[in-house]
Image (cartoon, rainbow, N blue to C red; front, side, top):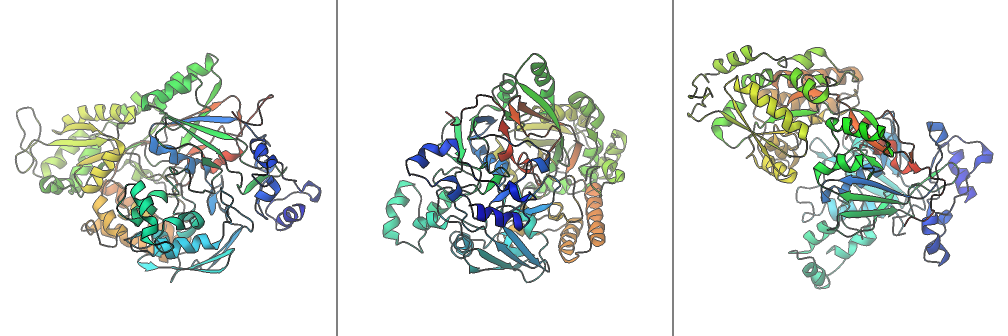
Length: 640
């Protein structure tokens, strides 16, 4: 074991003096299994070249193993946050947003086109099976290229534009991915909060694949899962992100230990996790994560009562006062205020692909979207909901980004009902009913329906204020709260007139950041779901882009891929942001309101000043939650 760790140190993965070579310590959590011979000792469970983390070099404390961390989500599906928070990726961002090998031992890149991935010899899945290039081969040949499992072909991560890459396997610890031309988005795709898993636990999934079994052998499993054939069976059990199959092996720091349908989900430490600290303590420090599933309105109250050790999801800025009061009254937690990196806290998305032809024509007129934006009193919303701490204006790059321009923040975004009314009159929408509401060209009252996920009180409060100011424009706002999944499905099918959501996840883009999310490349941008579907399915679904400014965004996104020079990429970014500010595809309201983060007094290594960002960042993931630990003098080595 010492020889293996010496090799790591010599290779320069961590900077430690020669005498500090760590001896891997056994986890108290798995000590019984090791003693009974049911599990290998810790030195034999980790890779030959583990990822060694020097906590002191990062300005953090070395921790101790043990304890149960409590956190909450509001839907059973959100157990997938464990994959987000755990943030074990082939390559991942560090806190400086630099890409580094993680699950991979290393990687090589040639001309931004050929990527050689080097696996860690001796790395194993959570069930102890070897993690090798066979797991990449299985995904590529038996999943991505299988028409029944992947009817639209391999995912975007294996494409550059419309051109498909290739994957080869020189040996069991090497994978080579080659594209016909430079693919600057490839490595960043692997580091996403919701990553494209380009590998699978082949030893587990082969039992559900027709290439390795006869249909007769699989009939009983198909019937038991109540699916039609082998492909739905395989897809049901193969979801590395959903984290809802406790039998599916993982490489994350914790693995599921509960079956579905319970209000409390448990995740226990992965005995084969690939990271250790520089003292030889096997990560994660924390033994068990207990994820409670509670109503959205209960998160703040339960956090205030000390029932969560680490909580940000489900908390809004409006909860800060009650959390701070609980802290002052002696509750056992601290309330941190992290910077929010979303481009907008609240954004309204008029659906350019709305199925109603009359409304679609109105929504597609930029003057209408500009009038909506100018009819929002952002200052009133900021003061009422955020004590004036938010930054009022459009959805655009934040001040921390080199692409920030004050003109993009304010264009069509200053409260000006007079000019907004002139724009609507100019469109010919001059007729009104007896109550002052404008009429559509077909005579219907202009009732603008905005659908929400019903999860954030601040959204409903903001829309209530907008309802009053839009009435001065002759527009009646109708708010319709829905379940999140129902909302998304309605948007994707084109039956939602408008939706409200967050702004772009990444509000601090850099020249190396792919701008694809500013172009109609994904249905999840609620302003153009059908255009996104068309791009994602290569024309098999959705609608082709048919508006000139949106077409220009597509051209610029493709041009960015072909222009490696930072100057050219900066110019492309600035033009795309200017188009968004002018066209008001997503009507931002305000940004940068702090995100409350509740942290137990016992929990260590949680940064006081962090960024709450989905991508890049994976919320807590970028801060390596496996390095958090409980500082209890009498902490039990085995969690109950």
